[in-house]
Amino acid sequence: MRKIICSVMLLAITGTAAMAAEKADSNNKETAEFIQRQVAQNMSIGRAIKSIVGHYPQDVEIVVGTALDLYPDRYKEVIHAAIAAQPALTEDVVRIALEKGITSCTNIVETAINAEPSYVDFVATAAAYSTPEELNDIVRVAVVTEPNSADAIVRSVAKAHPNKLVDIIKTAMEAVPFVGEYIVDALLATFPDNADAVVTTAVQESSAQHENLQRILETARSAGLTDEQLTEYAIKGGANAEEVAAILKQD
Image 1: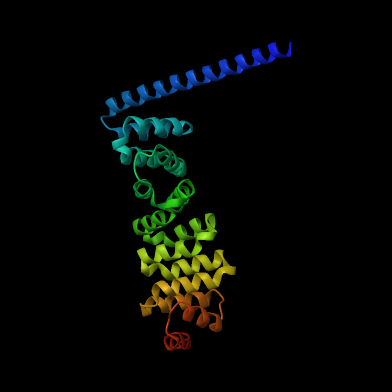
Image 2: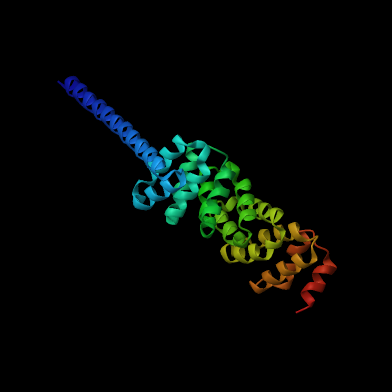
């Protein structure tokens, strides 16, 4: 009797799974046909996706995923249109595009940031979460594309990957050296116990530029670090002791 019951249950489960798969295939086919009709009517994949996602944000997963399957070479238009229609879904759109693998992670990051610059930190964090092995490239592209948000980018990505703090600072400052003071300010507020790593790494990347070094030390001092700490961290970062003393003596 037990074997019969198990067999019946197995058949029921298999049948349910088959029905679910069949329904999913049907939904995907209907979505594909709907998108293609909208593209034909709008004469543009971008306008079609913007309209669909704007009206049906709850279906962003299947709509964007299907659109990328249908038009992989038009991924920039699809991503840009979906984010423009629903900026709050930026992370979802980035994740979907990354899962599809239609282009490089950095291309997706750059496209998403250009579509909605104010969500740049969400884009970088979502991308770093999905493809942590490309974290440095993600940070580099994000800060280059939107340097005015470098502090928010670095803070968000570092919070998600605190063990990569030093690499994140180095990558960001190598790409855009003048953002050092903003990065230091953001990270000292977020990681006060890592002041040594934050300041030392920032100085390493800026010690060749006197003005950048000065702004970093002044920012760190404003965050509450003592002159003794600043001197120690700056010298550890490769700064000249006399130059550091001269900077700290100015105030």
